[in-house]
Length: 500
Image (cartoon, rainbow, N blue to C red; front, side):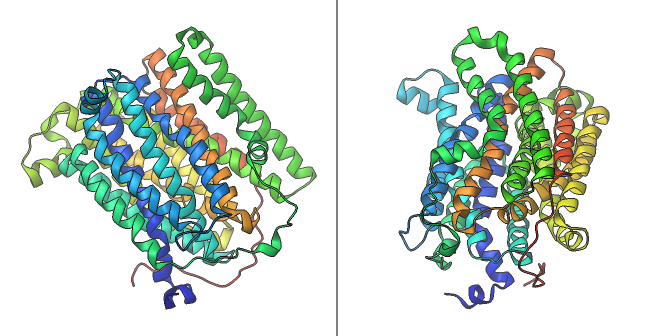
């Protein structure tokens, strides 16, 4: 075991964060490149693009839960989480190398439907990300004690992952999205496969805390996610609706019913928590509150390019676009309308991730004073303000960037603080399982973004994208107001330093 691991020093927390960084860079690359390639290179519309993105939630349903169940109870290649991180990194590399060649793969296989080919490649990419996602976060919880040290571990994760995310969007602007995919293939392989070899896992994880008679399986998982049934049903409907158009008239009915179910379950969980407080009830409230946030963020990631193209780009001169300056200056390549859309989106998400990388430091300091839950709610309020700013005042390039700055404050909390809060509500010996269950509050709501895409397509009003995002995050804030602050066992002061 390395000395830095024995001391739980900041260099070890940084090393521990690198597998999650691989996931973050992969996701940033996917966000920057996938929608752009599908819409500009293969001419798919907003609904078809959203359908391809359904591969992510589908992969997450199977990948995160199965890996969560298995990784808690296996040991090979010298670790519990290590094998899945290594395998996921390798598969991500292959998927990134395949994405630029969708049409060639179509010709080679004889499958003429580009959407099917794109969905299969996206499925493998998302499956690899999900195989890595759960163990990469679980290993942080495995190797850090509850409380401030664990919070520091997740904050380090977000700082490093955030900076790599910024780097991905910068590369997208300078070299274009297709070259970004090749760079991502190499970088994800390096950060996923090699750092984990220097981290020693614990063979026994708090075994005494788990009664031997307690069994966990898929039935238990399905029971645990009852607050998310609405998102699950709508997601299944979306998949079948793509292949059976006779189901289309039911779209709005299923969408509204799914949202109403989720809101009703939220209020029932709040009432139950007031009457009989428990960690399980808190876990369910956190899971549901988190889900509404992810509908908003996933919709933003998928459809911001369409908003830029229809609401902002018509008001701009191509040669005056700030986001085009990087590519024009560093490569000398003239930018087109299509590349301008990608560049504006990439610069906006660069700002989002830069804020997401920096602000966890401040959020950690604030959380020591007012608590993590209140800090989290305050951060989400900035995201709501950012979404509404873009929706109602977003007419030029910098309006999008200002909004992304505000949204980034909430984003910094969504992918850092929330994991620390959640991890203290579950059995430590089943951290992988519960991390997988909790991540369904990410992947199932992502399927709802297909409903957002359909509403926008039906109305032709791209402003609705950020109006709905603001309303969804505001709903999440309401549910978070009824989450109790965890009582941590570890009170040792731990800080995150920006230097060595």
